[in-house]
Image 1 (cartoon, rainbow over the protein chains, first blue to last red):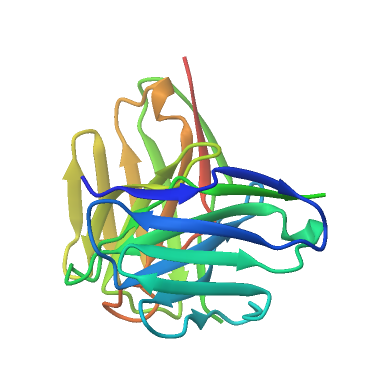
Image 2 (cartoon, rainbow over the protein chains, first blue to last red):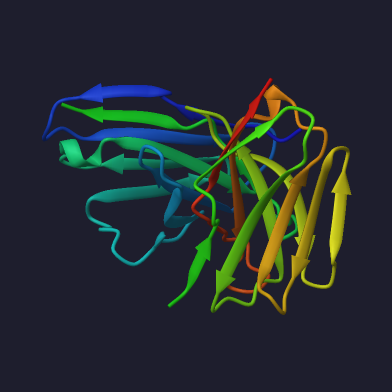
Length: 117
Length: 113
């Protein structure tokens, strides 16, 4: 089956530093990937839609300068949390929509736990 | 305003019984609705999809219904087992038939032996 990986699975950083999270589709190409954030005991909140070769589309209330998204290839999207602060600590999850696949199909990564000290 | 609500934050039932979870939505007209399972510290795992023109769909011990008039989906697990304990999320396409999905609030299901 289709596999999506995320790296790192867990990261701890100091306040003010930037952290990059990678999302890879391992056995399929994905023109579109999605980034979600999940706080403890809450549901996944869609942050942005990452489009290969073009700018990401951000959901309302998500700062595009704070959460930089790059989708430079059909198998890789990156999310960079810039100048991270403790309130950015969360579980970040990506999903990938296979290129040419049915619109209702996407595969989720295992998530990245970010802790900002 | 637009909402997706799962009306039980937590549900605790006896092993062997049927668990029924509810997903209600407001001010959306989804082409489909999905159900996912999420275990602690993991990404969501797809379980079932039901389209707007389908009333019911089954997969092994799972059953999903979709009532577009009531704007509600029900998710049933029959003969529940402790291994079914997890958080269950419903999701829909906020823009009809688009690849983007958004999630409901989730229900934490606990099956006691």
